[in-house]
Length: 88
Image 1 (cartoon, rainbow, N blue to C red):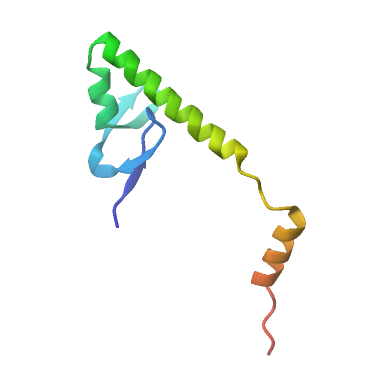
Image 2: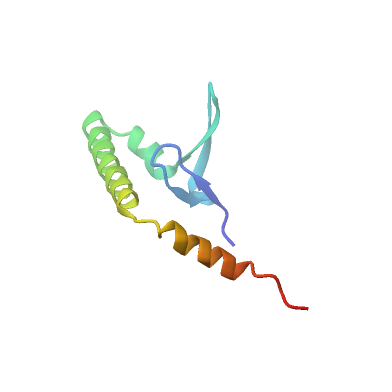
């Protein structure tokens, strides 16, 4: 099984092999190679990368916000069904 690490730059989990630990004043953070290479690019390329990543993050947030949780009663019934005492 591949070990995944959360990228603090693009806010996505990546395989550890694609990540690099960065020491910051607040502790160690992980960044993917893609974000590190983008940071070393020209200002216009960095800005374009940032805009693309922001759009990806906005779309992800929109999708998560639109997910409808099941009604509470349905959740309760499902939980009760999974946790029924076994008959001895």
